[in-house]
Amino acid sequence: MKVLLATQKPFSAEAVEGIRQIVEKAGHEFSTLEKYPSQEDLEKAVKDANALIIRSDKVTDRVMECAPDLKIVVRAGAGFDNVDLEAATKRGIVVMNTPGQNSNAVAELAIAMMIFMSRGQFTPATGSEIMGKKLGVQAFGNVGRLVGKKAEALGMSVMAIDPFIPSEKIRELGAEPATDVEHLYSECDFVSVHIPATPETIGSIGYDLITRMPKGACLVNTARKEVIDEAGLVKALENRPDLKYITDVAPDGYDALKEKFGTRIFATPKKMGAQTKEANINAGLAAARQIVDYFATGNTRFQVNR
Image (cartoon, rainbow, N blue to C red; front, side):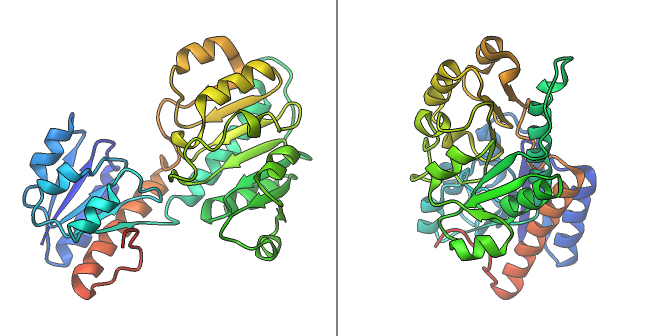
């Protein structure tokens, strides 16, 4: 089988070599397409691929059309909204992710963002401490639980909500369960967002929710750009000069927003959640192992399309 690693945002050299060794040891061919400038380059590269490893790369119906022998796509990471799942299902292509491999990296980033904003983005201005503050975790999966544990260790109290986890279980995991999302936003000095971008969640965090937050609160988004109603966010920041927003995926018109709101808003230059050496390697090697296992045994444990 031919396995293609296609990444506009490349893995580390150590990760690529580890992926190569896993794939080739199993008897498969391995090739790479890194830092490619356009979708057309990806479409050309997949023409004889049987398996594809990606990061945030867009695997559209057109990409799959150009890969008649493609059997499996593995997104090295948790999010998979960059893959057209419906098209993959229609074509009989298995799509997987690698849940948990980037979780600690994202959780550490969320905590760092809270401290960064509390300290006025490290300007000379007097900041505040996060100890004694209340953190709300919106979605209490792998990442959310780690954020909660780290926050608790730093002296924060933690509230959480997750539509798939009963309140009793959230309490067992060490957090106070919120009755609903409005309750979460109303009670917490920080809200850390970890929901996926789905038809139900896209644009779901807007003016009404954000302005429920207490005075001086900060919204932290290490999830997806699309879950934020950006017009509502801007309106909230305009009407509530005490509120703050930090994210690792910049909103539209970020430069103008930064000029307007100053240290009340911040976005990293690129998505940073998985940008650690450890997460980079973990996710890449997991993707390679899942492909090898799929071809050897048919294992589809981490399949995200049906």
